[in-house]
Amino acid sequence: MKKALVAYFSASGRTAAAAKVLAEAAGADLYEIKPEVPYTKADLNWQDKQSRSSVEMSDKSSRPALADHSADINGYDTVFVGFPIWWYIAPTIINSFLESYNFCGKRIILFATSGGSGFGKAVENLEPSAPGAEIEEGRVLNGTVTAESLKGWLAEI
Image (cartoon, rainbow, N blue to C red; front, side, top):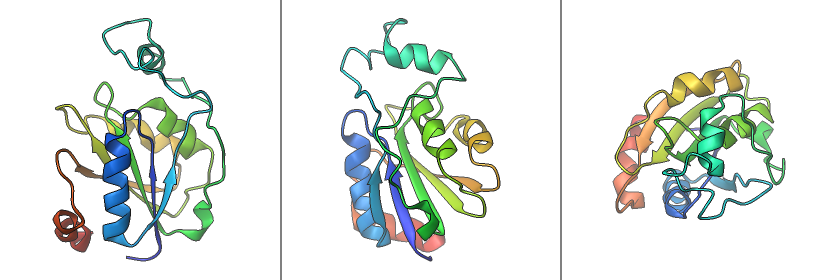
């Protein structure tokens, strides 16, 4: 694998923990995708149809603002993009991130954490946000993730 970046959005810390282990196992740099306005616990209440996350996820054009645009995407061939799975897809802040940079010619490998679902339509929903990139479904990293447990998967890709 050429030079890689692990970029991730984490709402509760689970995806952040998985991203750090993945970056270590892959020998990759790490970048946190942060919203301009951090999510509160109330914002993440998926049972409240008026919560911020529910409203964003019900509007396919929603693009939460990013806290910064400092990822040096140009320096990487492969970018692992991680997120918690919301409503069987990536949170719309991932679209914000992908649309903020030029990923043309890059390989994007998704990874996620989930309370029980798989990637669903994550690839399909993200492809328009990164024209010219190769986006592929990677792994859902739930439970205890160790660098050793990721070695086989990383060797395959």
